[in-house]
Image 1: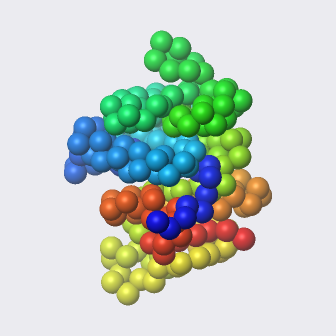
Image 2: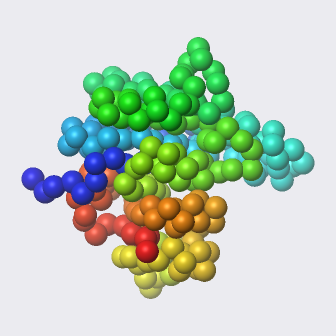
Length: 238
């Protein structure tokens, strides 16, 4: 069996990764499929931390466009990520994977508060750790939270799972001739205005030399294949 290239990873999932085909809500069958992928990677002795978005439950931009205060919309999104985190935790534990949820906003009846040393210790003991509630602050996205947490736990790579198999020079859904990049530099990604992550997250990764791999989650065993170095996504690094 081909060797895994990374010992400790941060996996960033969009909320749609847990959703029904409509893109909204939580589909138990879909969540179980994601849990199975994570379980296979964990069985390869990889230490896994996860950050999940909330787009399947709440899109803050929709509320803001109707006049909602930005901070309120962002806090609602953070709470929605905790719901997603608990759903994935349940699926993982039913699959036999010991999991802990830590949240940046304290809610001790359902999850641990985020403590960096405790999170690292969980990883060292072979537990999957899911970080909920983003950074705990409005005006910061789940992408920025994933970059921040990845650096705090000394992850070797940030895996960004999307519904597109990498970064393209044009929208592949509109342009059949769009070219996928196998590798690109952080600066190029920022200059191209790549939409897979926000500029704050890109800058954090660039300043701390944390490589990003953008890939499509729906492909069979995609997480494991990325970690083995298969060319099924785009690597963003120096």
